Image: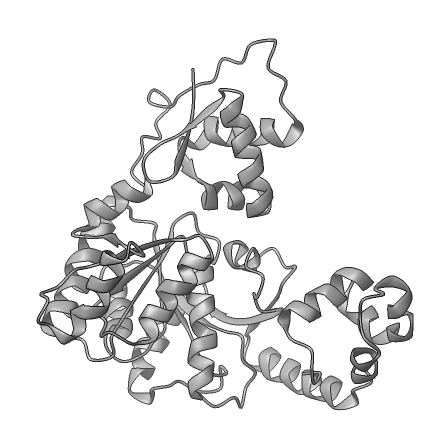
Length: 359
């Protein structure tokens, strides 16, 4: 709430000062600890109205039993934490595990056709059979979003709606019943304070959370321009997998998906089985099927490398995002460690970006 300080700047201040309280309490010491911070920012922190607004929001979330997840909380979505522009604070109401082992988002046009709604229904029905612990994320909007949420509920899959406004309202109002049902199996998530209107630019901001907190983005029907294409681009920027269902070249709401596939920004998707195999989510996990590693005396592994090996021994083949969650190691550091393990002949990369231990 301090003018001129965004998410990236706020995190730098907190990291430099040790905690958010000291950013305000010891603001005059900031130049000594973080020399690159301008005097304008330090003066802006003398902001009693921001403190008053925070107190007001605290009372709102306490009264309504809303979880306030700071960037450093264990329950904060760990995949999102690795994104540079991740929110400092999220507000969540529900019971979903935002760090579930398997998380995907389904997005698309607000003008869903029978083709798009049929894909939502059949895809999630089949996905439930193949991978029953998936968390389904979308934006509670008209069209594909709301169908994804409803079909997830119908198939008893947890589903989370990421909102472009505060938790004091539901927009659009006609989706209120679905939103209430989601609180029982999933939840509602937002970065916005109560009283925030669902303005256009908030939806674009919301899309980065949808993309960043998931392993993969699936686009189902999109015109040549639309919010779902923005989500797909954000997912690509965050190094997440992106998939799109194709459509006829003459269909207005398949042009965006077809273009994503043509431009190699999304993989062609035809079924839930295709998706699960591409993500490696159906890899064998029984003890008899797991691959064990026989490390020679000449291979020395660091503590973090040994930690990753132990995880792969326990859980089987995993993608980098799952390893980041399990090991609690930042994704950029994880990538470097995995490269070293590959060079040492301890692991190899399979189709779909899966990492497998070698004998």
